[in-house]
Image 1: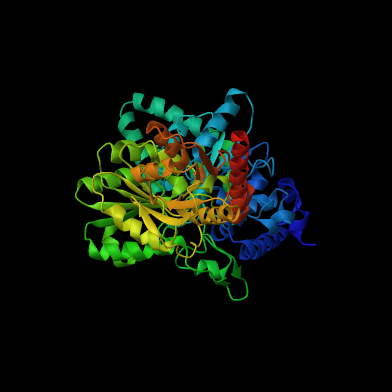
Image 2 (image 1 turned 30 degrees about the vertical axis):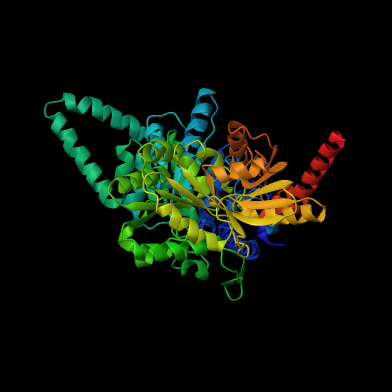
Length: 625
């Protein structure tokens, strides 16, 4: 039995010696590597926070003291130290542990959202609530892995700085190497001084009394300048202290003893304090530390012995990546923007070819979108590539900054629809519903790899309105050829009488084909159409719907306000009375599992949909009889 097997709660750490804690850290790293090699996941960030997490749980009393992770993909070690090591083998698998904090798993987990830069706002509210309620509880916000680049984090810092009574400790997990570690006894002494409540009282007296003495004002200014200059020469706390926040560090985040010392100082201050920890993503595992791209930030399953990923085919993102490079060579006005997602969304090849036309703005989706509007106003055509779920954060900018000004901006939404193992907050199931309300917007959903390039070219040709291209996660199906046209859409299947029109949106076209084949086998006539551009609704689709007994729409998006709902409204406005049955994602947060499992669970399979259609048509036939 290893040491990790003996850890059922953070308090079990209190009795371990320094030597045992070092062994425990090694066991944790071994398990992190083994589990992510099997199931995939965020390896690099968690290897980098082992000692930091140990220190947090030895200094603070979770779950009474709350720990908020930003983003939650850094919380694997936290899970291991809060009694979930035995279940870690099923990380990110159906029925197993989530890849993010989960209230359903443990009382030690609070914030489940995986969208970055939110922890400080959560922590600000929590700390204020405890203060108002008279509860002596601490809140620890761990923010890092780029989350401090988000504007929301700085909005929170601005408010935290004036909440002097909040027992809030902000741990900045700085693994970007933007600062160099500062070491030495003087730095430690200054850190101790700055977080000593007596120092605050003395400093307040000096501030009030010294200026009243002859020459006192000038003396205070000199002393303050010397103090500030000395501290700024030793550590990069100037920015935080100018906001009015106490600062400890930088501290070596892989030195558990030093981290515990810094956290104890911060805890004892009684107000908001920033502890600046310098860490290395992938620390302790050579394959991660030497990975130049992202230190194995997020991995697919891989072979531990050879450290090579399991082979996989081309994914949707690859088709976009190739086409955007080709377009960039043809059009000098084409520029690309992303928000800390250069490799995941496939813009790395574009950057390699056209670095001066590629902009990675960090975790700042709102800025990315409005900057894109400015680029469009300046005569360029921006392509903004982000995860579908993250565009939610910039809806106002899409609406008021891009659409209102009729800017030609193309949005490419990666991981649209059900994403699976990444959990509820990563499913891109909201975009079609949210974006439907934007005046003038045009939404495209390719059904296969060939249609990605086709629709991308059409999208970037629009210079007076926003356009959207949504791409699912994983590998696309084999190309599905069209057998005819329906306006701007493609007819994919037509057999028998015009009983059922199946509208397959994007990647659901394959499901629609399966539904049609099953209907034909039951003696029904079926037609399958891929709208290609799902917004605005093509008049040809309205006419096609009027010719059938039943319309069935299938989409990888929420059923509320999605393509099916808008089609139903459009048909009603046109006086078409053909009934419409909408099949999509139920409007709820989905538990993590593989994409195929989730689609089966929610009934987005050819079998389930065909069964419901045949049963409905049979019932309607009985009624007519």
